[in-house]
Amino acid sequence: MSFSLPDLPYAIDALEPHISKQTLEFHHGKHHNAYVTNLNKLLEGSDLAGKSLEEVIEASAGDNAKVGIFNNAAQIWNHTFYWHSMAPSGGGAPSGAIAEKITADFGSFEAFADEFKQAGATQFGSGWAWLVLEGGKLKVTKTANADLPFTKGQTPILTMDVWEHAYYLDFQNRRPDYISTFLDKLVNWEFANENLKNASTQAAA
Ligand code: ZN
Image (cartoon, rainbow, N blue to C red; front, side):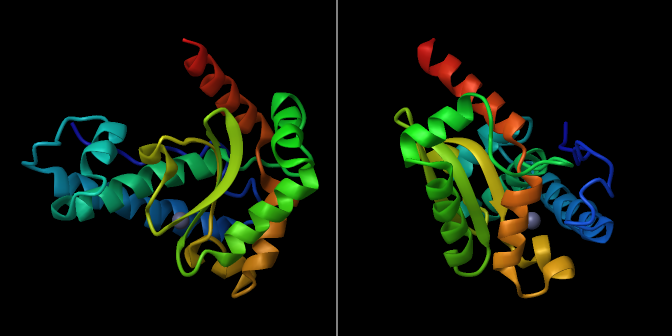
């Protein structure tokens, strides 16, 4: 059994004019696909072959001998989560439970947005900005390279890719413009609401 590249949850040009078809052709078709190809090669004959993606990530996290496996597995997970974190006609202020929880935990949507922008803009080099749930509270966090929150007891609610490959064709070096566009035009609050609901259900079980 090997991993395969998951389809995008929308058409390849569905995020235009904010994120171009060309960006998604490279980002999904080349970068995300390369992580899948690399992981399948690395897992051949490994004791982790046949495990789920989450199990591979948990088992390789922090293990120097398995850093290649971790990086490729985590990048597959991160990218799949990122595609779902965006939607055509997304962005703007949230509604539903996530809106109430953001106001409760950050004080206001604007305070959350400022903190999220700051996390994305100050992640030095490649990485990810996240909205996570930890100990029942929402918080903003950032991770470097392939690193991700769920191995640290945090439940991911949303993510934004800040690797240059995510924005360079559309925004060149203007990472702050990409981040503002992500929040204003792309973020999928419905997905955030689903993740919040699932996290609450798990915590109650
Ligand atoms: Zn990426």
